[in-house]
Amino acid sequence: MTDATVHYDRLLAEQYTWMLGDDIEALAAGQAALLRDLGVLPGPAPGVAVDLGCGPGQQTLALARAGFASVVAVDSSKLLLAELAGHTRDIAGIDPVHADIRGVLPQVARPGTVDLVVCMGDTLPHLPSRADVTALLADTARALAPGGRFVVTYRDQSRPLHGTDRFIPVRGDRDRVFTCFLEYVDEDTVMVHDLLHTRSGDTWSLRAGSYPKLRIASDWLNEQCRRAGLEIRDDTTGPRGMRILHAVKT
Image (cartoon, rainbow, N blue to C red; front, side, top):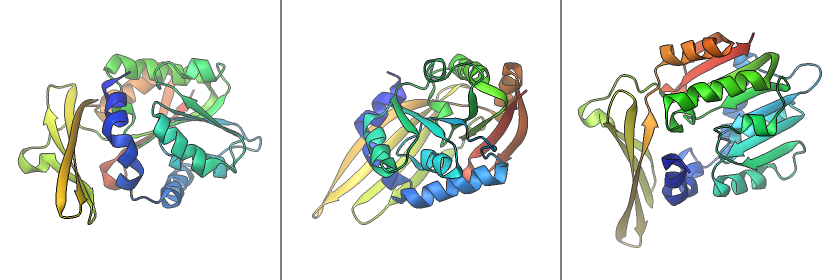
C-alpha cells in the first residue's frame, strides 16, 4: 500500500464525494464535456477505456455514456469502488478492479487493445516516485492501440506556494470544514496535511492526516510521454488550476 492509499482509507475516501461537491451526475457531466472538447470519443466500433484512479465513478460514468463498450475502473479504495458500483449498477460493460494503478494495465488489458486510458483528478501525483510515473506511462503506451488516447489531469506543484497561500480551503458547510496545508519537502515532494473539522451539536472535533505527493512539472511529464511513444496533442490549464494533458499513441 502507498502512503496515499493509507490516507484515503483513514480519512479521504469517506469525504471524497462531498469534497467534490456531492453531485456525481454534475461531475460526470463535467468530465464528459472535457472529453468532448478534447475530441476523445469512441470510434464507429466502440472500444475499451481504462479509468485509473476512478474514485466514486464520475469519469467511468462519462466514459460509459460516451459510448465505450467496456470501461475498466481501477481504484485502491474499496469504499470508493462501492460508491461507483452504486452509481453504475444499471450500466453494462463496467468492470471495477480493486488494485494499485501501478502495474495494473498489463493485468487488465492485452498489449495494443485499449482505445483510451484516463488518469484524472490529480491521481498521478499519488504515485510514490518519478520512476513509478515513467513505468505507468510505458504500461499505458503498451496497452494502447495505435492511435489510442491518454488523458491525465493533475496539479503542477513544481512552483511552490508561499506563506498563507499554502493553506487551501477545500469545502465547508454548517457541519464540516475541510482544509489542506502544503509543506514543500524537496524538489520532488510536497507533503499534504488534511484537516477535517466536524460539528456534533455545539462541539467541533478535528481529524487530520498527511501524505506525500509528487511535484510533477508539465515539461517533465511531456518529455516522459514522448519517450514512451505518446505524442502530445494538448497541454493546457483547466478549471481549478488542473493541468490537462492529452496524448496519442504513435
